[in-house]
Image (cartoon, rainbow, N blue to C red):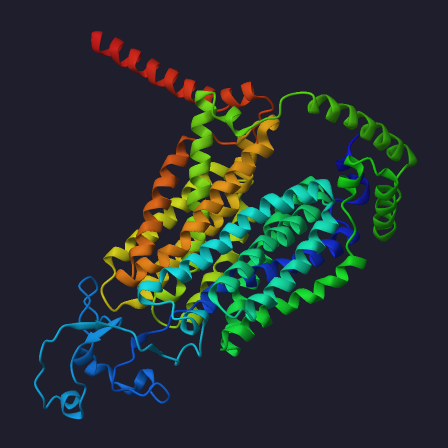
Length: 556
């Protein structure tokens, strides 16, 4: 008898669970706001250096017609476009700008008077306010990178808190911090305080989203967990698209940051609505509190829980405590346990690489929509919208076609579609956008698969350790992803090509992993080492018998 049997009596997805579940899905929308806000908060519009003859108070980006840029700005040796970070050292008289005075080469001068920005698409951004262009362009990518570092730290810190202090206190602590530092990021007077505030907000997204995810999955039956996990990701995708709607109506980056933060206030009322996880309470020996929650759920679901079930749960809790005491006296499992044995090591390293690629490519594509050309808001909206069919695909195929087939297939599709951008003719922006969106759809499906596939690959004794290490490797991919945007300034398809090459490589290498669908999950290190070996042995044996048969036929 376990808590899963209590769920069976309650109803695997009864009225009570549905109400709490859908309420817990809503914070995923706000987490998406914060994770994707950097695309607009750090938007980099076209810019040019202010010329000596221009008055800072009245000069605008459009004051110098684009056709006259060649008179002021030298060509960039890499891109061939005008290098607007410097200008020719000449006298900018009316005759010179009209073309009646011949050009005299006197060298170039680095921009010092300031920059003028194109405000036709963005009124302003943190980039334009603090001039994060030219030799300071790395600052914008570093800010997004540190945000993802915050996500990494948050998954560790709030994960530990939720296991020790409880799911509910951790959820609300991270929510309050998210509100405070979300507003502080909006009023930050300079780059450093803005970036630190955003990094803390990144950490809180782990606390809010992951804890809500855990509470939701802990109260539904096993047959509904695939749906519950995937559907919550869909709410994140809805938040992805709504971020573009906010950016469409709010053009000032500070007000945009505030607007994306304040919806979190709505979830403060959850304190009186969302219960603590009954499963966690039972594990901590707080059975009376757990029974109150179970009774409330039973009443709302209009079912009765037999008294013997409560008695068996009490016995189970006592037995669990003894097991925990026994486990505490034994050496704790570490990631090195996964690397000591050859077959398990090979699978672990392949899984780590898959996580790195999925996270890096997912965020690399999500944050690169401004570099694709065309309507930037529309590109961003489509990038979020294609995630919905990706998750629907998983709901209908993950338990039918197998985990490995979907993981490899979607990564290969992503790789091919992104690499095809090499062959797109110049000026065919819609083709680049189409290839990028097909790649985004495929990598989203892959990212959704890797969670389940990895959990089924790792042995039970080191499963949490393996998933934790995989998540950390994934965050490294997310930390590096913002720098891909800078490569798009050199050559538009370059970030897509890098993402495509990584996806294609990971998809092919994943064919070396064993299928897990309808297979018993490995329990011990020995099980994990042997899992997949039998398939290889069978293939080798079949190949050997074929060779013997060919030899006999040749002799005859």
